[in-house]
Each structure stands twice: as structure tokens, then as C-alpha cells.
Length: 108
Image 1 (tube, rainbow, N blue to C red):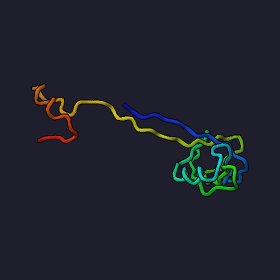
Image 2 (tube, rainbow, N blue to C red; image 1 turned 180 degrees about the vertical axis):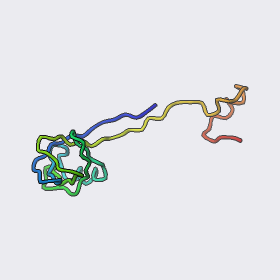
Image 3 (cartoon, helix red, strand yellow; image 1 turned 30 degrees about the vertical axis):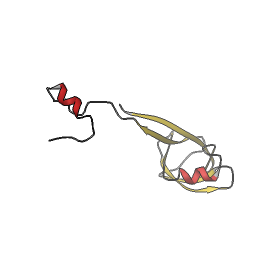
Image 4 (cartoon, rainbow, N blue to C red; image 1 turned 45 degrees about the horizontal axis):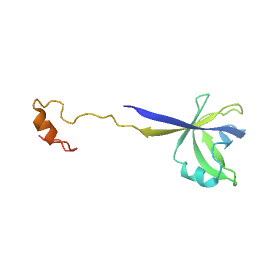
């Protein structure tokens, strides 16, 4: 039950107001383009997004909702959904009937 979280982290390389170049999160431009839809967040509470890849070493331009600081840390959260195991018709009184219907279809 719940979800498993994993984080990607990076550090600001250059900052200017709400824009920053982030490094050490990815190591090639293909990875930056693959993870572009992810929302970024920082240690100090800013939210942001990836604009584009820069160069060949995985640096990227990002825009945040406030002024980002040089000593901040940037995170991208990766989720893996974990589904709980449960019986489909817990209200059945007859276990013989319950064992017959082991599919994902709910019967009226």
C-alpha cells in the first residue's frame, strides 16, 4: 500500500532571479529531454520546470516560481505506484462463490 519514492538531485550552476542552470542531476542531454515533464522542487520550497538541455554534459535551463539561491538543492521526485493486495468481494458470505470469481470484473 502507498507508493515508493525516489529522488533525483542537482545543484544550481548559474542563477539569475528565477532562472537557473542545474547540473549533476543528469549526465546527457537525452536524459534531460526524457525527464522534461517532471516538476522540480527545491530545499527552500521553490517549484519549477525544465526548459531545455544545455551542452553535452546534462546541464539544463530551469525556471522557478521565485528567486532561486546558489546554495539551494534541486529535486525531481520519481514515483513507483504500489497497489495493495486485497480480495475483490470481501462481502461474500460463501467462500466457494468467492473462489469462483477471481477476476477483476465486479458482479452485480
